[in-house]
Length: 184
Image (cartoon, rainbow, N blue to C red; front, side):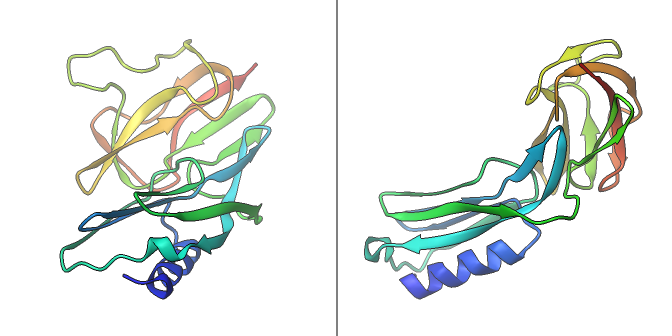
């Protein structure tokens, strides 16, 4: 993979609906992650990016693996043993995955992707949250399993869980309401 290939991959990733992309080739690993910009617990669309690629990022190999995840994460691009960087861009207007809608002081937490929703990390474990639970922004409120990948669903803001709409172990559509939070 040369610098042009990396730049093309980054441009395609930026335009895609993916939140994470991991590329592996022999001794090179390239991880790209997008983040939605949050303002008052409302998440906007995917952030744009400017790519800077160093000549040290060139690597060639015949064994390539690429994995992608639509879960949201922090904005970053990291390459082990190589130098590839990506800087934050500004967010552009439409609602993105995991968005919440404001209705008075109640926020609806929606599914960031389509998949099976789990309220607990294991079948016999306590659920991440229950009705009446106090949550802080970033706390894990559930898990979504899609294509054998598990993605955490983070709390969008501080508050109290008022209603849990999604059933444990049941399929959740993209942007379906998982639970409601009373903002504090």
